Length: 262
Image (cartoon, rainbow, N blue to C red; front, side, top):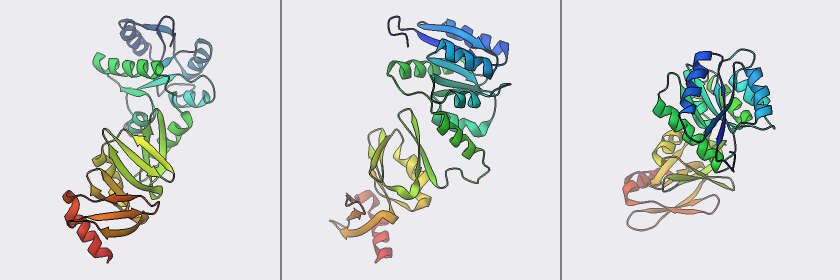
């Protein structure tokens, strides 16, 4: 963002003129935004990004010459602006875009939804967040479109800050709740992820993860010892040496686990 003027420089890319006009009109109604240009295809957009160096691009996905995804791939290692994808279809990619892009707009979108995406762009540029990693986005979308029964089957995909991380579920030792976040312990890394514990549990429970506390979810393959603690609760000694305690809320399940392991 232009630090002196506080202006967000935006490029609008879409192969449909009326779509570009609508996004431009919405942008021109917003304070502190400068539309530095438009492009009707991916190759034209590539050239304008390189010369105009916008802070943010509202980018259509399906375009002639070069798709939105291919465009971002071409920019890898160069000036890469923050990207808000716009799309009228491709339902399977929506989840990928939601994880890996700054934001996406599903056509037709209203002014309120547009403003939400614009505000995310302002915040990302103002706070100096890293722009989209094209390689990770490509990998993620290929998994979504691969035809597998469950594209998350062996990996947990999480967004850490502005980066997307692919975690092998077998390498995750435990997950701890920390306010509005969860701390995922994978090897020597502890990753702070903005997720709800129950959502993470839903994605991991089929992989041998077990809830012992409202704030703790463990991978049973990393469990080394269960030892009675007090009042029917247990201490769980993990492979790393970390000791976690169960809570009364999960006492019945934990005692059943202890019995099954004895």
